[in-house]
Image (cartoon, rainbow over all chains, first blue to last red; front, side):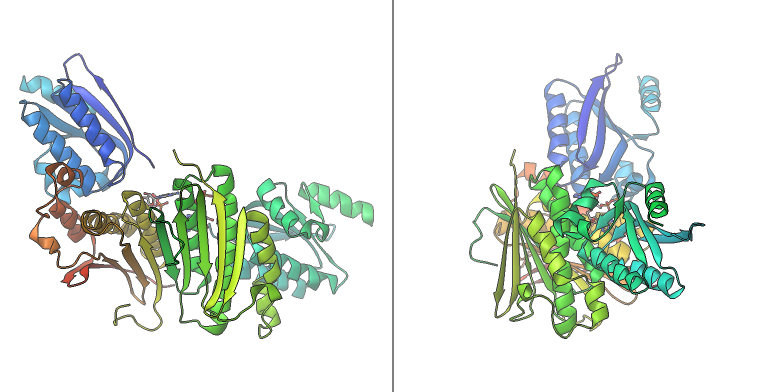
Amino acid sequence: MDLKVSDYTTDDDLTVINVEGEIDVYTAPKLREKLIDLVNKGKYHLLVDMEKVEFLDSTGLGVLVGGLKRVRAHDGSLELVCTQERILKIFRITGLTKVFGIFDSVDDARENRKKQK
Amino acid sequence: MDLKVSDYTTDDDLTVINVEGEIDVYTAPKLREKLIDLVNKGKYHLLVDMEKVEFLDSTGLGVLVGGLKRVRAHDGSLELVCTQERILKIFRITGLTKVFGIFDSVDDARENRKKQK
Amino acid sequence: MAPEIAPRTATVELTFSPLPVHVRTARLVATAVARRGGVEETLLDEVRLAVGEACSRAVEAHQQQCPAEPVRVELRDGADRFEVVVTDRVPNDDPAAGGTPEVSPDLAELNGNLNLGFAVIAGLADDVNISSTPSGVEITMSWPAKKD
Amino acid sequence: MAPEIAPRTATVELTFSPLPVHVRTARLVATAVARRGGVEETLLDEVRLAVGEACSRAVEAHQQQCPAEPVRVELRDGADRFEVVVTDRVPNDDPAAGGTPEVSPDLAELNGNLNLGFAVIAGLADDVNISSTPSGVEITMSWPAKKD
Ligand SMILES: Nc1ncnc2c1ncn2[C@@H]1O[C@H](COP(=O)(O)OP(=O)(O)O)[C@@H](O)[C@H]1O
Ligand SMILES: Nc1ncnc2c1ncn2[C@@H]1O[C@H](COP(=O)(O)OP(=O)(O)O)[C@@H](O)[C@H]1O
């Protein structure tokens, strides 16, 4: 029920953030702090893995949008891994599928990143 | 969460009632009907298997006491199988451990019944 | 709200039509709020059961005397105690006097002996107070809670 | 209570101090009552999310303007609809006008764009009504329910 957030950085300089649990008005501050913290440490290419997210509300969306704004200020990127229909639906309803790159797996996102370089 | 009640009669004429789920103010009527039904069918030796009961409140206790009264009117018996501490606690708090025979297993109860014959 | 609420006490209040099914909702809410309020896991079973008993009792009383009135459960997440107050609106019904005379024997059996319910509450709550007022019966129960 | 309640409608009402943690309790209760009220399993996710959004919005508004006042959620288990009414007590706050001007940018970010919340509610509830009255904002949402 609560939120677990952890991260690691790949050798191609992508920081993957694993999020597990419910991202809601109660737990979103934790994710927000993590994103701010990473940007402060100079990590500007973020990939949020949402596969273990059980619940996401608009507060969580707001935090992701906020993170995107932060990394963009440094020419960075914030992309998502998400295949769960119930979570994707929320991005779709709010039109945010057009704002975030959404991938089926961490590997897909890394592949895409290599292509763009 | 809801209550499942089923029964079978052994060849030594003991009717075992399997109860699964929560016995509370909402579901107790179902158990009560089952007990009444069995007594009406001439089953006077009942053994209620509580091993799969997840919750029991005083309404459930009341139904068991009511069943006991009914079978006693026919020189019958109503005994219980229960090893779950959280359920036993409720019988203890209300003093009903003195009223019901409580066994560790259906086999134990049948063994005891043979001895008494 | 009762006057004794400390200003910083967070409260959740649930009111519901007097139906047995809503006793389950009350148990669910009480357990969830107690858990978050720092009541130890080992005590949550007791909270669930005691709150259920108090609500069952209130539902039964309302069904007989005022089926249109809701039952009220207040959950107070205080500094070091988690407190639950279950209030019915059946005036001058003395709960400890044992059984309501008008109940049909079947219903009384179905709902258990009222005193069984009280025995359960008394055996489970860390601290219990039952007060019968002109506007109804108020059962206050509490358990220790740890803040972290 | 609102005048439109049919006499036989069973209701559950939850009021809570405006804290994010209680939004979880509201979600929990709404989902449980909807399930029992006959709302299809496939719609429960929508109920959970929409009720959470409406409550988050009310909690945010109360925290800024009236932190001592509780937020109210009414669940009406009617004949063929399950209805949820979330009421705040922030007067003349026009929710659809987009954002409260006094909010610090950080808080606004944290709580999401208010319009995102409304977008979610509008996208999920089968039927939504938002009314801003002198005593507060009332969001009414409903879903079909089957009785058996
Ligand atoms: N989805 C649900 N809807 C209604 N009632 C529920 C639901 N889940 C649990 N309950 C009830 O609420 C009580 C507490 O629930 P919960 O805290 O989930 O129990 P547990 O700790 O046993 O998992 C239970 O006694 C049960 O009756
Ligand atoms: N024990 C609990 N205490 C508080 N909140 C809970 C609890 N269990 C679930 N919740 C919250 O209530 C909502 C609905 O719970 P539930 O019906 O049990 O969910 P699910 O159908 O996913 O099992 C969830 O979004 C979760 O935030």
